[in-house]
Image (cartoon, rainbow, N blue to C red; front, side, top):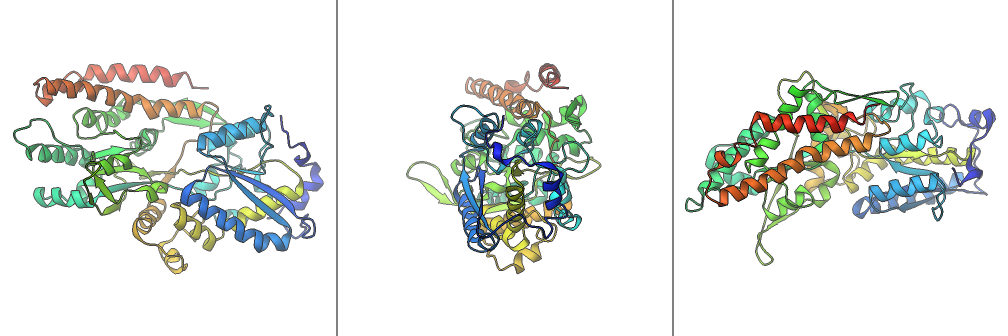
Length: 479
C-alpha cells in the first residue's frame, strides 16, 4: 500500500524521541539534512506566499537543524486528492507518498483508514496544542479521543461580498441600508425590492428585473443554515453518519434560496459568483474568504464597456430564531504521513514554525486565508504585526476575524461517504432552481406575469416532491 516503505515509524523507542512537543532529543543532524516533501493545492498568490515562507525556512531554521522542505503544487484540490490516494495505494506510475500533504477532512480520513496518518498529539505538548483555535484542532479528531490527524495551517470562512457602487444607487432610491442584509429573511425581502426597483427602470419592458444575490458552495448553505436553525444534517460518531434531514428546517432553506431564485431575485450564471459580480448579473454574493484576491474591480457590460466598482465586505447573514450563531469552518490543513522518526520530527518542526503568529499572519495576508492560532486571530495583533493589509484583503481579515471569534465554527465530521453526501447538498437544490428558473423565463417571454409563471414551482407539492427525492439520495449514505 505504501511505496515510501523506508518511512514507516518503528517501535516505542522512536515514539519516545518525539513525545512532549518534540522535546530536546532531536533525531536531526545538520550535517545530514532530512528532506521533506509537501504537496499542496495552492496556486497564484497562495502558492507565491507559501513558496516564500518555505524558502525562508530552508535558509534559516532548516539550515540550522538539518531540514530541507520542498513544496509541490498538485494543481486543484481534486488533483491533489487523486494524486495522494494514488500514491498511498501504490498505483502504477504514482509518485512516492509525500511527508506532508494539504487535505480536507474527508481525504485525511480516507488516508487515515489506510493506516498512513500520524497522530500529531504525540508530537505536541499541551501548551502548543492550546495555542490553536479549538475547532481547528478538533477537525482532525476522527475517533473523538483527542487525536490530531490534521495540523491547522490556514483556514477560511465565508463572507458577504457587495458591489457597493451599485448598491448605493439602490439604497439611495429605496432607503435601504446594511441592516437589510443582516439576516436571511431580510435578504430575501431586499432581493425582491431590488428586483422590483430594477424592473421599474424600464417600464416598457416587463419582468426584466435583476437579481441582487448569488451564492457559492450550496453545501455550506445547507449545512450551516441547518445548524443555525437547530438541526445537524449529518451527525457523525466514530465515522458513521446519521441523517437528520428535518423537513421543517429544509423547508426554510428552500424558501430562502429556491423560491427567490426561480422568481429571479437570486441568480447563478458564471462558474463562480464573483464572475456574476463582474458581469453585473448580481451585486452581492456569499463566498469563501480565501477567494478575496479574485474579486473584480469593475463591471464589464460588454467587451468594450465597463465601469469601476468599490467592493464592501460584510458578515454573512444568518437565519433568525436559532439558538446559536454558526459560521462555516473551511480550508485544508496539513496531514503528516508515517515515516522515519527524523522525517516526522522535521515535518512537525516546519509546521510549528509556519504557524508561528507573525509568519501565519504574513501567509494569511498574502494569500487570503485566516490565521489559525488564538493570539494571531486578533485584528490588533494583525495590525501590529507589521504586515501590510489594505484594500479587500484588509476588509476580509476584519470581517473574517470577527466571524471566527463571534460564532461557533462548524464543519462536518469526516465519514467514508462524506464527499458524496456533500455533493448531493451542493447540487440538489441549486440545479433544480436553475432548471426551473429557465422555464419561468420562457413563460415570462410568452407573456405570463411572474406570479403565474412561478405558481407550480412555489407550490407545496413541488417542495414535497423535491424533498422526498433528495431524502432518498441522502439516506443511501447513512452508515
